[in-house]
Length: 245
Image 1 (cartoon, rainbow, N blue to C red):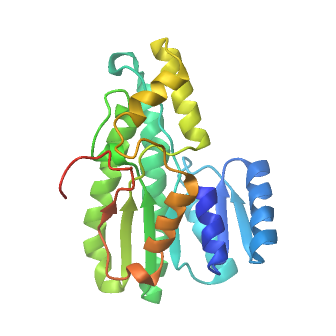
Image 2 (tube, rainbow, N blue to C red):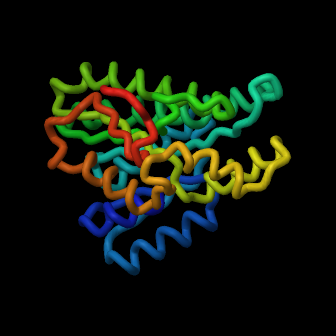
Image 3 (cartoon, rainbow, N blue to C red):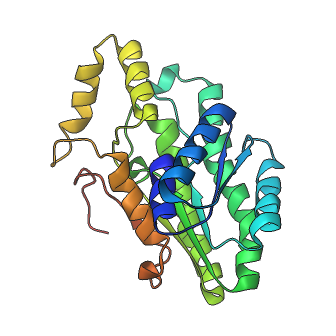
């Protein structure tokens, strides 16, 4: 989803700074975006679970571009399984990157957005924060925390023309989804096809989302077309989440 979002924002004319722990994959992705979209793309290889990483990322971005207009938080994936079989490491891993990584990048970028009186923050969270899955509780809990932070933070940022919104994708065909399906299949002794069917059976549209579909909604929230939207959480999950909100 992060890669698809980067391509769409570049197509819209944005200059990008991409961040990841995987230097080879990051460099390859950046080069592809440059060639296709003819835009400026920088990379920062870092680990956002390290406390100083977000500050260093933002400082290097400001040094190069002098401002940050858009921040997309798309880091973090959580392992699943039976609650009573999940170790402390699984829970801590889920919160260390997805929650704390997002908190730290926002905390580092927001002062610059306030100073320039403009900012668009999009947190890619996940629909299990609204509708927890029994085998996905570490991720569900992390997602719920991010939704609470997004909603509360929006009120403090609104007077500064900085908006913050969340996007809650449902099951999306990404590399991380494939890994999760393999983990759940291994822990349950079932096939990957059967495990995935457990999810798609609950989706009225009866299919997974594609990364480009999610990326289009991220680009909308990052644009001035969504300027009057803040503290909101959009949920593109094929109708899976049942509720009025």
